[in-house]
Image (cartoon, rainbow, N blue to C red):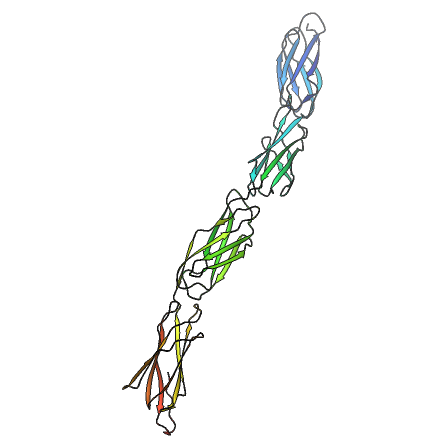
Length: 406
């Protein structure tokens, strides 16, 4: 007849920390002569079911990966031909494992505006094992820093910032802990170099080619060279090549500066924009831009007083030459008047004044005189003219004369 048994079960270490392997040992005590043989089944609540073989009345197995908390272990001796089965229980306490948290930054040192990546790594302290989960809080001191919370993934958390100001920044990271892992903190410092970041200045023209006198707006845009970011401040100096030169310094607002001018004269002109730089950003000069200024179109009109007139009475002829938009300014040079009555021809070339007027005074014989006014143009304005104007000259005391103009 089979003898009864008593099974005792123990766990070591107990308590264990998260990730630590636990050795479970069952001792089967016979209530009679002999030594029990066979197997023992270990059932761990919230864990594995394991089987061990008795040797000298004991069986041991190793349980791994037990989560935090209390686990009930039931060891059942399955009996043999001489001994009956029996069961024993114990409890295993798994407590959170200690952790260490480290933090690094790259690149370190960085330049102003450069993106910096902070990396926190949380690892268990032996005999703890496993991969911590949860949240890490980054506390970045100094200008452009702040407090940021990031999730752990694979035991690591990252944070990228491009807002840090010049100087040394204290860095603290705090792991919040979890069911299986205790909180921990790590510290570091990060340095942002004071040297200004390189920039690129680009220059554009609102209209190119333009015509003489037409307003043209030049726009300079200043951007930091990667990996730097931010918005440069300061001034931009625009230089336009010309016999006399055109230079204007304008403020940089939101990374752009503009300059509007209706100069220079006709022909090609080289335009550059030079950024002055500031505390955080280095100076730079744009690639040269060639601005082509073409002749402006002109328009010529004529009038006379009086018209009709009497033979021998002086007549004032006026030619007015003006720019046609978008051209602007005052044309210069002579206007050639040609008057003919079909028999006689009169030609003379008065010069335009500073307002664009040319004056001519003539006393003409009686008849219908065709008047032509031709402006030959100058360095900045194209030629224009009028050729269908009629000056009516009557005999003295000849009565009313019908005026013919066009």
